[in-house]
Image 1 (cartoon, rainbow, N blue to C red):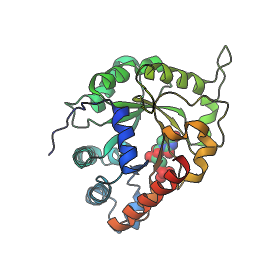
Image 2: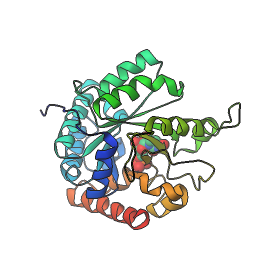
Image 3: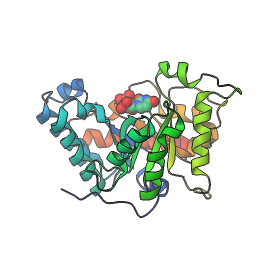
Length: 286
Ligand SMILES: O=c1ccn([C@@H]2O[C@H](COP(=O)(O)O)[C@@H](O)[C@H]2O)c(=O)[nH]1
């Protein structure tokens, strides 16, 4: 097994380079039971292993970012997590950045353990970046933000999620008039301050759904990347990105899972679907 290695450059710098050289796309590894079936695989650890290996072998040398969805591995217990560990190591060794979609969030002291799981280079799940939830208060994420800074990793914080239910929390208005989501974006802007020069990305990103329609009431210029899930199975398309993100579109990392994965099990189908999405994004985001 490849030994996890820490980064020598900040995540944001590595991400911008990967998007420029490999294309602006993140592909999700989401082994849904229905996809395993569609691929002719069994819904068990052998099916999970084959599915995951196929995606990593097809795409890790080509796309900028692979985003394993931890839940689909955890449902198989420790053997599923072992598959996830191998996928992370192999994808990183092939040159992809790995964004672990774990959406962790807890009080600060427990958050420190989550941070160590994904952001400490000694951990078998060490990844280039991780998704976290700020709904125990942005300050509760401090251990993850600090560990990421120390090791050149990235953190993506849920701000405006792609699901319609998110609005009841994220659009809620705080005393003083700012929405919860705007407050999260403000915190991220502060975390990235000083990191970003012209054209550079900071390492602290926001998750902002591509499904949300225009967001001009939000200041999306956070100095870091905007992970945009929702393209493909959730109904958004690359053509929607300029309308949703406006001038911030250049900092958007669109993410597609089922929209690519449904083109398996052959590697050629996965590769051409990913290339098509990346091309469509390039055409609208430059
Ligand atoms: O706001 C969010 C945050 C995360 N996700 C995750 O992205 C993928 C989407 O999968 P698709 O098959 O492309 O719909 C999945 O892992 C979600 O948990 C999101 O959809 N929205």
